[in-house]
Figure 1: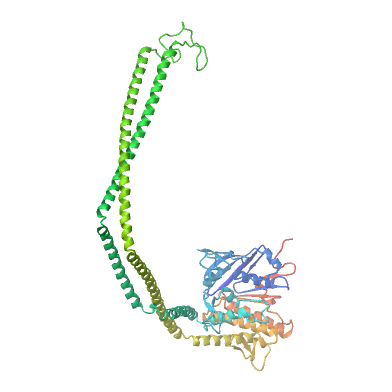
Figure 2 (figure 1 turned 60 degrees about the horizontal axis):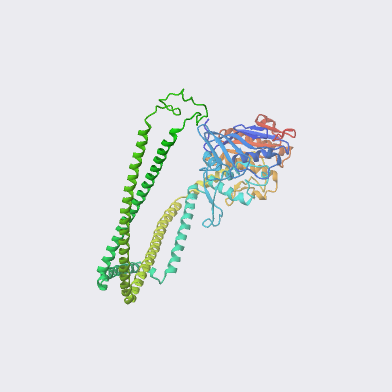
Amino acid sequence: MAKQNHLLQIDYVRLVGGGREVNFNPDLSIVQGEIATGKSTLLRLMRGFLGALPKSMPPEVNYVSAITGQVHTGAAEWLISRPRVTTPTAKVDIVGANSAYRLPAVKNDGTADKTYSQWLLEQIGLPVVDVPTSRSRPESSEYVPVTINDWLNYSMVPGAEIDNMVFGHRDPFRNIKRRYVFEIAFGLYDTEMARLQAELKDVESRINFLSQQSAAFDRLMRGTMLGDRRELEARLTTLREEAAELESEAYDTANGLHTSLGTESLRDTVIRLEDSCGTLTEEKDAVERQLGDLEQLRIQLHSQVVKLSRAIVAEDNLLDFDFIVCPRCGQDLPSAHEQDHDHCRLCTQPLTDQSDRRAALIKEQGRVQAQISEISEVQGFRQAELAAIEQALAQRQAELEAAVAELDFRTRAFVSSRGDELSERSARRARNVEEQARIQEYLEILARRSSIMDDARSLQDLKDSITADLAGRDNSSVAEDNLDALEERFEEYLAQLEPPQIGGAGLGVKIDKRNFLPIVGGRSFDEISSQGMQVLVNIAYSLAVHTVCIDRGLPMAGLLVLDGISSNTGREGWDARREDNAFRLLAEMAERYRDKLQIIAIDNDAPKFLEEKVVLRLSADDRLIRIAS
């Protein structure tokens, strides 16, 4: 069957490590048990399963490592595993038919687009709204989000609150959000209007910031050059023209310097001598490299002559040796009459004419020595050439030093005679450059201020547009109809519970428009002295809130958990009848709003006529969290 958009239905909850799984009916489910068996703990763990984990849990909860379960939100079905930790890194695993998520349980740590709370709000179809923390001064207060925990205050009524609070109204921090949730649900606080108000607050703060900046700038620059942009631009143009004139004068002075000093030919001589010294230095380096190469070749050839001499000497001396033992391996060689006289006894190669080989070695030795002589002659030529180059280079360098010294002397004389003029020109140019840079900075500041004013005008236009949108939104008549329907439904349900009369004839049921708390018999909830009566008012009021929201399509999670229905009531007479009336009312509404509203009742006992709705029975021997012995 199709689910309503705002439905939040729990199919089952499993306490991992606690040995317990609870399956709930889609309409009415009853959890019963003796005192101190874990009934209230179950409600708190269910709240932690859907929102933030409550603090100060009983010690046995430490055995629970995670809370898993299956829920319906709208038309979707989800398997959820929520770890029983509140660290910022804790993640909630969510698996659906076609998607899966792993979201931060507490707050967004930057690795996910949203938190578990934000995801659940979207799935249930509840508004994601930011509201001001101060109701009296919303324009200057901070804005905070209305989270799933704030909506769960209307869905889960603990036994410790059912006989003294209405959705936690006695807690100052919870009461702020309680009122906001009521206003959002019943149209008193338009979500679009809330968004526009938050945007308007942001725009106004930005406008104020820009106005303060502009005012501070005006106070600081009043009476200075920054007060007139046109004056700054005119001054910058004048400075640029003066800089151009100074550069032209410097160029003319540089060009006329050599003419006035008579050093034009001297400058040409210096340039010519520098080029000549460079050429001679290159030639010197080239000759030195050639001499180095020749010396290396001469050394190599001399080494070759030595080797040839050794070969000739060995040829003469080794021919008279007749080996009888191999000089390599030490074995006996064949005797003289056993050897082959045509082959060497050592290398076994054919013997040649020894005289021809010796002559060839002597010839090669002579050729190499002749080549060494030629190299020595070339070295002599190159050394003479190097000496000539070094002499010419020394002469050119001496001439260059003399010319440079003369040019330097004449230039210093010129600077000395016109030092004041040159110093003044240099100072003028430095001042010009510095003032140009300063005016450029002033103009950039003015440009930023102009941009700030443009932003302020754009923001003012946006503010006017938002203000017009806010003025055009008026949902007061719709909200009044919703409140009238809630009063009527509340009176209807309370009458079915047959409460005792308070104050006079009739129930006198109303909703206080100042704080949205129920009034019965002219008395506010806090003025009702009977805690049993407060329980009946809480049951009727919370049930009326949910059913009116369903009938009118208003946002409210389709889940209502009531703990301690029989609190502060007797077991005899009218008290027993009123307790039965409460369960009959819950059963009737659960059946009428089946698949739109899931009701879970937690109490010490369940009436006999609703035995089939009991999903969990707890006792001293079978507590909620089963701890293995």
